[in-house]
Each structure stands twice: as C-alpha cells, then as structure tokens.
Amino acid sequence: MTAAPTAKSSMLPTYLQVAPLTIVLALFFVVPVALVVVVSFFRYQMLVGIVPDFTVKNYVDLLSNPTTWTLYRSTLKFTLIVLVITFVLGFWIAYFLVFHVRNLLTAIGLFLVCTVPFWTSNIIRMISWRPVLGKEGLINSALLNTGVVDQPLDWLLYSDFSVIVAYVHLFTLFMIVPIFNSMARIDNSLLEAAVDAGASRWGVIWNVVLPLSKTGIALGALFVVTLVMGDFFVVTVMSGGLSGSATSGIFNDLQFLNYPRAAANAVILLIIVLLIAASIFRLVDVRKELVR
Picture 1 (cartoon, one colour):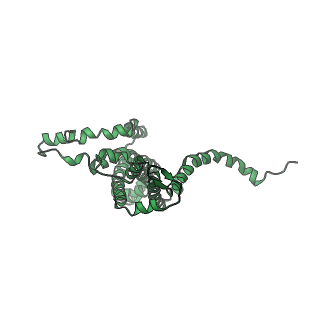
Picture 2: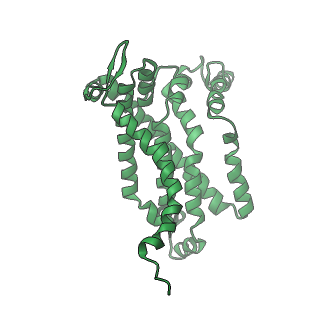
Picture 3: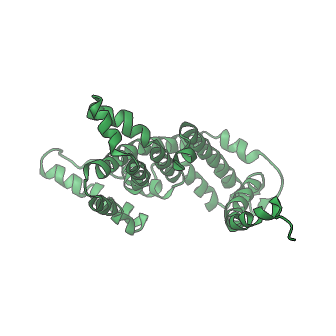
C-alpha cells in the first residue's frame, strides 16, 4: 500500500518548472542590480579607482549638483513629450487597423508594414534623419524652393526637436503593438450597442474603445518611458551635444572611470523609473486585465 503524496512532493514539479527562470533572473538581473547598488556606496579616488569604503558622498554630490537636476528635467521633458506623441500616433494607427480595415489579413499585413523599419538597426534609422532635417536637407530644400523661408531653419537638426523626432520614429511601434493587441480583443458588438444607444463616434471611442484599451496603453507607456529614460545615444547624436539626459551623465562618469558615482546615478534613475512604472500599474491593473 503506497502512501499518499504529500503537499510538499506535489509542489516539487512546480518548483522545477520555475527554477530555470528564477536562476536566469537572479544571474542577469538581481545580481547585477545588487552590485550596482553596492558599488554606489563605494568611494572613488583619483589614480587609485574604486575604494571599498562605505559612503553616501556619491548621492549627496549628485543630489546637490544643479547639473544633475538639469539633466533629469531634460530627461523627463523628453519622456513626457515623446509619450504623448507616441500615444496619439499609436492609438489612432491601432484604431484604424482594428476597426477600419475589414479584412483581418490586410490588417495584419499593414501591421507588419509598420515593423519594416525595425529590420534595420536603431543607429541607421536615427542617422537617416540627418539628410532630412539638415540645413541642406530635404525639408529645408523644399521650404527654400517654395519660398516659404528665405534661409534654412537651424532648429530642425541638432536641437531638442530632432531628438524628439528620432525618439518618436524609434519608439512609436512599442506603443502601437500593445494597443493593437488590446483593441483586437474588443467585441464589435459592444461598439454596435453603443451606437444603437445613441452614442456618437467620438462617444464610442471615449466610452468604449479607450477604457477597454487601457491595458495596451499602460504597457505601451511603460515601454516608451523605459526606452526614452534609458537612452543616451539619441540625445547625444541628434542634439549635437547641445542637450543632455540622465544617462548621458552616467556615460560621462564611466568615461572618467568614476564607477561609484555612475552607479549612484544609475540607482537614482532606476528608482525614478520604478516609481513611474508603479504609478502606471496603480492606474491600470495590468495582470488582472491580461488574464481576462
């Protein structure tokens, strides 16, 4: 007569299933982040390098430095502007693909067309804006030839405008995809019922489509926020060094081998991103929506 399996033994297969993912997360996320946090409390000494003495001087220097606040304000400015623009573009593109393209295969095909630029690297797609926005670029040439302006516009390239254009180009797809997935799950009968109840087209969008797409909007916002706040290359290249971000400050510290200060800056940035993510998840229960 065999004994009945205990609760502990019955849970063993579940532990074995999650063990690989747990090991991967521990090795490639938990351990690196923990090391960054630990190094952020070390001391840096010229000609010596990292000195493992506990100190909070790195955080005090960063938070008391006006340059740090300027860089973070610039980062938040870019993040907010890009988030708004990508949301507007992503929402309406997804809305068109889901509700105005009758053929599902056609909608999927148009959706895949949106991904074609992503077959090339981010660097190539970003630098491709230079011949468009430059003083002798396509836009300035068209404006000069049509007599709209008398001289080339200087603010099109190497400015905050060019940085935002590059960000929108690079990250709009990350807003389209989750919103498209959320909208595709909306039953068309709900829209028909709203119309039968007397709702206008804008009323249907505001009261039906937008609330039912909030999961995709939240995920898209999270993607865009993390990508913009974690980038430094676009700001450096497209602004010509005239603008900066929090990550560019981290990069400068790394160039001078000041790893403790860079680590402290990275911890501050991580905390800000986590607070923004927590705010998004507080507004929308993503886990609850995804299992519906």
